[in-house]
Image 1 (tube, rainbow, N blue to C red):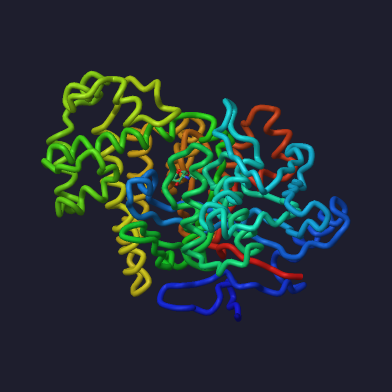
Image 2: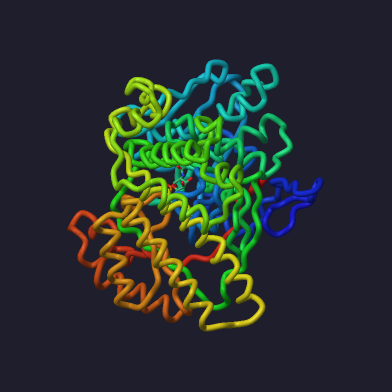
Length: 492
Ligand code: NG1
């Protein structure tokens, strides 16, 4: 099997691309980092690792909170990633041993692979190694107990994707565990298959997420963003971003651990309820089973515009109560809880069905427009088209703030500074804190914009954050980013 530049192997059949094994060369970008991790591995386990895995975080350019409704998104892989050094465990044959290079913050972990379990998180969020365990469990489930061999692994982890910042650190961890385990189990390493397994198994952590992060973690390619579609099946189309434009990521440093709160699942639940509500109004006999807007759109032959009008016509209230839903569907509150709410959304009393539905449908339209404009721009430059891209990003943010209510005061301060600099920006990822992504006209403009953010936002941070980030001139929290490669596997 040969690997081309991004570590994607020969295409094995229509649409099948694999993670090819690459030789770790001294000129590889990651060489220094892998050498350091290899040395740590040796210090911890007294042997050299057999292989390395690298899985990136991502920044989503547009298409927020739509993946779990079946709609497409437009992310790119970033250079920040999770790297694993992996070796076999010759003495304790079924043991998984995990060590994090950041020993001060992440405790060691060990477990027996013959009896895997990943319990739902306790308040405060899951321990770091649970994300890893999700990945191992995902492969076990995929292969089935009969085919899965509990082969022990020794693993050293090094991650530099900012945590709880909307850059998908959790999925990078889960996906890296999936890739390492799949390789050890001798699987074929089909990128799309691994992405689907990773998306499915991350749900063990308790978040009912879509598959965006895991998809781009595998399908990302240097130099382009990707239009990722989930329906009717997972598909990624490279999208060339407008020439000269420079994307900047700025971390508000308001951390949001999705798995430690119910906000994310509350939105998922509201979208599912809204879908059923509308499906019932369309007299679909299976309305209770339709839980993604895209399936409803398809079942009724609606397009983006007719869907939006339908929402406005049938979801007229600003707030729906439990009683509203129970009455309309002829169900009890207990049924509502057991059949329609998730484990961590049992407390919900009110549901903003109209606002959530409108956001999802309008945002899904913006993704399609964004891709189309990028394709037009690749053929001929147009100032008007560039303006449209900026407008779409701004509209996306406004909708996330107003209709989806997932912004944060610190994120809003970053957005206000961006507006003042005349830069289009939006919150990226799940929100409620985390990062914004901004589109600048050129490298020079990006440098000016970053300078303004450092002056007006980062220099004003509270002392404990200043102490941590100022010595490095805030370069880890605000940076220009280029689209990077998806998952890679290296052998020494
Ligand atoms: P973050 O929290 O930014 O990694 C989450 C979901 C995505 C998507 C975005 C919102 C996970 C693992 N990821 O991303 O699938 O729904 O929010 O667009 O939950």
